Amino acid sequence: MSFPDFNLLKNPRHRVLRLTEAGEMFGRNSRKTPVGTFSGESGLCLHPDVMDLVNLLQWPAMLMTVIATWLTASQRGRRRKQGFWWSFAGNLVWIVWAWPNHAYALIVLQISLMILNIRGTRKNKES
Image (cartoon, rainbow, N blue to C red):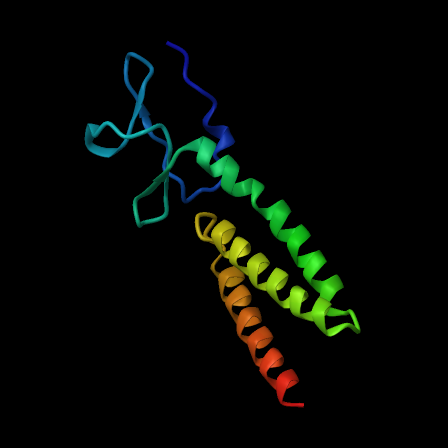
């Protein structure tokens, strides 16, 4: 029986799942769970394909952040408003990416940026 290369799991917090004779992968205590990686102490089990999709989210999030910054720097009020919403959506996508990757500082940063954007929008309306 050949074993897959577990060196692909680079995060040391991820626990490698055990293999049976049939080559199928099961979770802890022989419960039949999908092939996956246990993430952190919460016991969250994410299928490798799902993790690949989650990891792809960083590219749209980056693009959304660049578009938001471009629009926010505009002198037109309508574009600045669109920039706020692009930024808000980009922050949410970053949070979705950061959670399973245990990037808690990034989550705090994105929430802080959301709060500062809301504050800036309110102050802009007042003046």
